[in-house]
Amino acid sequence: MQRAGDMEAMVVRRILPAEWTLYRNIRLRSLSADPGAFCTTVEEESSKNESHWIEKTRFDSISDSEALWLALRGDLAVGLAGIFLEDGAFHLCHVWVDPEFRGADAVKELVSAAVTWAKNLRPGTPVKLEVNPSQQAAVRLYLKLGFKWTGIEERMPCSTSQVVREMILSE
Image (cartoon, rainbow, N blue to C red; front, top):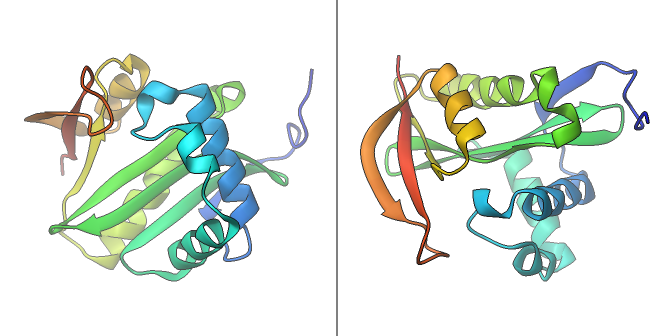
């Protein structure tokens, strides 16, 4: 079965201010599909009002301290990645690609777009992420993209049984 946009080339770009519904929909899809990968739930996020999504999208489309990136096939959002500056490092977050599009290099392009933006904005600033080590496909991908373990591990704030491990992009 073909989905809308399958025949079109995938485009990765920074989110536009008016695309709050696109962001909300893909964020909720990511939480439904891979709940163990994120430290929030679809119920928690879906309870947020429209103004939250509008402001988040607007801010992340223009900020020089955080950004959201979309992978699009036509008008269908198939992937998402966020990045934000905190404590002297950029932190990659919300990385997710629809399972039907995972073989199309969308995640590599999303991570590359976010990292390139950060490095152009503030050269020399480290890029980090936290990953649940039980998400083995994500771990393999991040290692392949040049991230290395830092040795820092902590409990996920939303779970008493799961941990996240920090990775940093090696230069």
